[in-house]
Amino acid sequence: MTELNFEKHFQDKVDAEIKIEPKDWMPDAYRKTLIRQISQHAHSEVVGMLPEGNWISRAPSLRRKLILLAKIQDEAGHGLYLYSAAETLGISREELVEQLLSGKAKYSSIFNYPTLTWADIGAIGWLVDGAAIMNQVMLTRASYGPYARAMVRICKEESFHQRQGYEIMLTLAKGSAAQQHMAQDALNRWWWPSLMMFGPKDDDSAHSQQSMKWKIKRKSNDELRQQFVDVTVQQAEVLGLAIPDPDLKWNEERGHYDFGEINWDEFWNVVKGNGPCNKQRLDARIKAHEDGAWVREAAMAYAEKKEQRKLMESAKAEAA
Ligand code: BYC
Image 1 (cartoon, protein in one colour):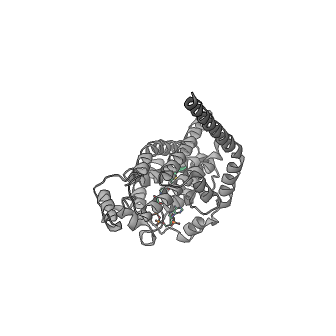
Image 2: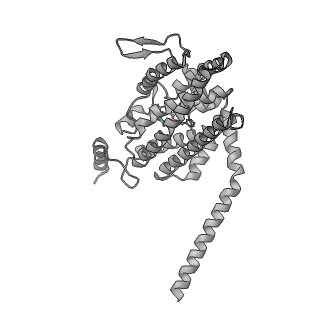
Image 3: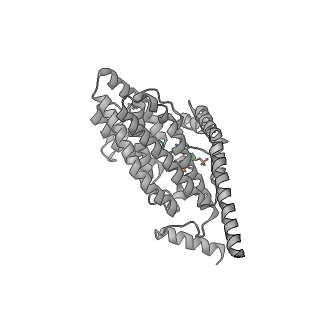
């Protein structure tokens, strides 16, 4: 088969909803796009543990602490499934981690904002995990098998995360005036960054068109953002909280909420590394990597010893 035939066969499979598996032929650009997106996603899960980790020791009760610990451990697990999915495309874990620590790889803009009060933990679960699910449900149908399968489990766990966040917000919103104020303040600070999670506007999205043709993405950034706004407005109403957008209005004709313009300068500034916590987040990951060096060394030494023992045993068996 010529390169062109391979390409046609590949696209026919994608169009017929047949999953692409690691050993199948795929265009280089498809492989590159997947490595980029899956690894950014993995990095986001891992860096995403930091803002919430900041509140483990200050959770207001033992029950809250246990739930938060479980949620953060889930995020670590998501990172691991996703790194494994990226590795099936021929890149090593070391390279992926190096790209994150050197600042070469991106991770979600949202994790560069600080968690100032306990209500931020509620807002992250409700809005950040809520936005993540909106985006990730479509990824369970991504054309690349290992990515799609990892997303199924991740989505189930994200849905528990979203509920735990909403339940924190509900408790605060029904609490004292000070608690209500905390909940509203968290919503004010997390609303716009959550909308930014979906990425640039469709017209400015470099990869969307091609990724949709390859069925990596099934919906555009703007479509998902709109879907998120539509469901979240109603949830805010139940909480009795106000979404900080004077332009938010139901549009009967479109059957959707209209909403205000996102501050795209802020978005790109954060993506380029100049957000409020970018430096703090990367420094924390670098420190964790350095502190964990002895674990990696010990694991490698154990693996080498096991391999040596296996070789000696097979040499003995051959000699006998
Ligand atoms: N932040 O052409 P576009 C979680 C970049 S974590 C930073 O639209 P694409 C959780 C984009 O990478 C969930 N960068 O790109 C964890 C590209 O730059 P490059 C995280 C962004 O890939 C812990 C450029 O802008 N979810 O749930 O077609 C606790 C142009 O964009 C962002 C995922 O990672 C951003 N927000 O679409 C709690 C989902 N947006 O690479 C919760 C998987 C865009 O050319 N990823 N950029 O240098 C995706 O679905 C897609 O990659 C995106 C962007 C929708 C994010």
